[in-house]
Amino acid sequence: MATPLLRAAVRLSLCVVTVIACPLVATSAAADGRHDLVVPRDYPTIQAAVDAADAGDRIAVRPGVYREQVVIDKDLSIVGSGDRRTTIRAPRTLTPGTDRANSIVEINNGASVSLSRLAVSGPGSGTCKNGALGSGVRVLEGAHLDLGHAAVTHITDTPVTPCPRSAVAVRIGTPTAGSGSATIRHTEITGYQGAGVVVLGAASTATIEHSTVTGHPRVSTNGIEFVARSRGRVSWSTVGDNECREPDPGCGPDFFSEVQKAGILADSPGTVLRHNRIVGNQVGIHVSGGAADIGHNKIRRSSYVGIALEDGSFTVDRNRIRGGVHGVAVIASADTRAVLDGVRITRTSGAPVQTFECCGFTATATQQR
Image (cartoon, rainbow, N blue to C red; front, side, top):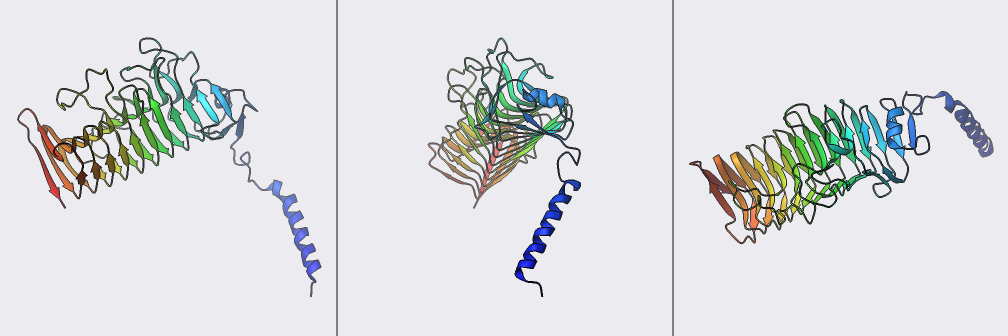
């Protein structure tokens, strides 16, 4: 029978054999064709690493502030050292990208790109009339972005000022041609001048989960927009502080002749908005076109309306709305019907449910317990 000492010696000899054999086993990134590039150890800038990388490579970015634009047209993973330690910051001079606008990071050419553990930050040094910052992160030409454990912040011009369709933190797709898609998780999007996330075009989609989207305190902003027939899902996220800020002459309470700023804005069927916390917006959720899935959201302190439903048929369920002038607005510039299933509305200064009608169309609301 082997003694305990002999058994220990056998185990040690097996470990030695295993260690010697390990280099023959294809476990490294290089063995499976992927390379790890490190910035600034191997390349001084992120763009230089992107240019040198092969599709499928991983770029690790050490702590620091990298003042550069980054354009990515191949499948890559870029990993920072934490969103408070690694920052891609807008340089003083920005070069227009594929959409002729200025972005800090652009993803194009059908690339699938993962960005994680880093921040993308402005402000831009231009103005609305000269060199405006279009986007923090731009996704187009069929590209896909996976953004996680990250931050996109201070996406503004200098000085901060209203600028139509400018300074969007993350912009995905185009209104008429081309597409983009994104998955955004565990990300903070704050201090934008235009909107937090904008998804554009019928072929464009986005999923936003466990993230925070917070507007700028001095200019009019929207939080998340699904527009031009795009679709997506927002869940388990917090969206707040998106209001009409003075002076903004186009803003006002009239749904037919003025505009309102919203935490989440969507104009097409298929949008899913569930289990979110929507706080301190002019309108919490504003959806048009019918057939959205709106449920189990907590909507607080809207300055005007908690949920606005416009033009189509809607069923919303188990939302909790507190504060505002109205809890739910049902708006008809085409016939609109809303079923409110288990929607609880408290502490409004006006009618909990209010209809608005125009041009001979009707708006009806049915409440179910």
